[in-house]
Image (tube, rainbow, N blue to C red; front, side, top):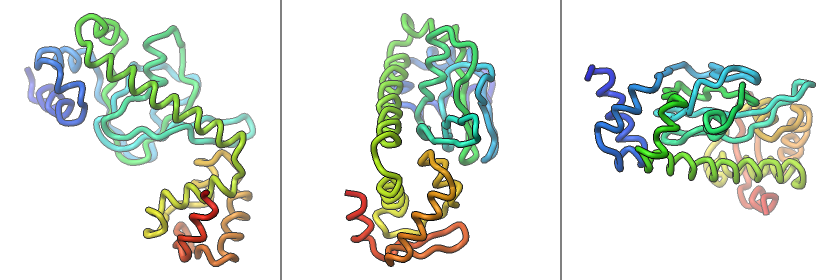
Amino acid sequence: MGGKTKGIVEELIETFSFAQELSYKQIEALVEHSNIQEVPAGTIIAEKGSYCHGLALLLSGELRVAMNSEDGREVTIYHIFKGRTCPLSAACVLGDFKGNTVTVTAETDVKVIWVSRRFFARSFAESEPFYRFVINDISNRLFEATEVVDSIAFVPVRKRLAQLLFASSNGGRSPVYMTHEGFARELGTAREVISRELKGFERLGILTLSRGRLDIKDPKELEKLVQ
């Protein structure tokens, strides 16, 4: 076994709970049937209509999964963090999907292991902890996606923005480093709408705005908007 393969095996064991339930030989087999991809922040690793490389396991970093409309609007469906998998990549290998339906972007420098369709099919019989992990993760991400759809359809932008600000600022205790465009992508709305709402929050004394940063001045008032 080469040094590179050994290093990936050790990373899998440290990062993923399912790997701790597999034998070393089983993990080696997974690595041998996978490709490793390392990309810097800002890289698009999958686009709508692009080829599905396999099941994505995130060894490090953060990915953002988004959908784009024909008029250029973008909405974040969910984020994928270290130690998790992408449910849509799982759908690709489980079903007969020919291409991706979303855009996946590296929010930070990332390291992804792409597990082949062939190995994943074998795992149902040979690596039960692995496919159990994948199925559980798919379920969790799908619930997150339905919450996003529910929020966009039924929750006013002002409340969703307040919720995002409250969470991103650690309850108002930390500054938030995000552009108006970034907020718009996360919430699936227009930049102009975000700018208008943030200016309204500033007039109320809830926060102060500066380029690429905002500071929460009245966490209690912000929390009221969240509820």
